[in-house]
Image (cartoon, rainbow, N blue to C red; front, side, top):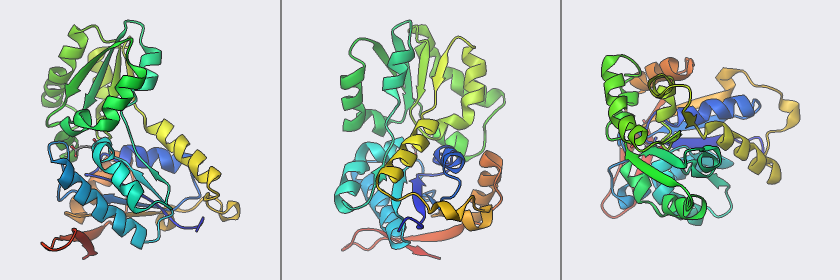
Length: 282
Ligand code: DGL
């Protein structure tokens, strides 16, 4: 079991911001990443839809023998993490929640901005996190409609991207935020532009390195780390990717966003009225 791959998924390419940190942290692990690009963005979908999509992908990852799953998507974690844990109680399933706790520790102005999708802000997980850690600070919630789509399209810089980002950043700046949380895994791919626009005095929190460290701790605790004698793996035997949309578009995004050239597999989404959705390899 410890030699099995780790499964990761997101609505699209955003979870690659988590994937690249897992690659650094765990060099002997095999990774299987699924991008549900047939349904990106998740952010404005209903909880039932997001749960159904997440369940289908988790079923696929389990069928592929994954020893652990990382829900590399704040939005899917917000509504699907608990149902997935109930479905696979024997499997470590890690999710993401906006990094409000570290932001509260960092802020000096007492104002923290959080950038995320509508579904993340509506989720119980986010509410509980704010209730637990952020009672003594002001939290400015910034829904970033369209930002995940921009990253999917590869529009990571330039005047149009900056103008869009400024539209999201201005309300947080106006409220006096000195710390901003990237509460969606797509957003670290525009972190350099965000940093340039807000200036060096603003702390911008990307939770991805902490998620990779937490994954390593969980695998160690469960006795699931890849066998030490395996050593670091070559990319070809290490990474697998699948998308529910166009493999060629995903392959281009892979090389643009994380500098990896690999060929992804196509997964076809099939939904029958009497059953939960299922994914089939094309
Ligand atoms: N990457 C996803 C997240 O972390 C969401 C983007 C979307 O599909 O709306 O929230």
